[in-house]
Amino acid sequence: MRNTVQLPDDISRRIDSLVERTNLSRDQIVEDALAQGRSLAWQEQWVAGVLEGLAEADRGDFADDAEIEAVLNRYGAP
Image (cartoon, rainbow, N blue to C red):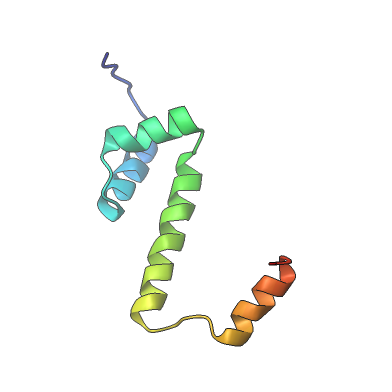
């Protein structure tokens, strides 16, 4: 079943921006927001974090052994 929803221009632009930065369609983004409770703000933050992580990896900016150990110690890794 297909439904049509009229969205305000600002929300439509935000969805279009997510479409441009991901491999997702408008339908997938809206469905994720409705079915999984992932707001556009959450999705925008997640995509920004992933893109920043990819940019860091492209620059060769990885955690060193001391940083990894600090995280493991902080979260009580076995």
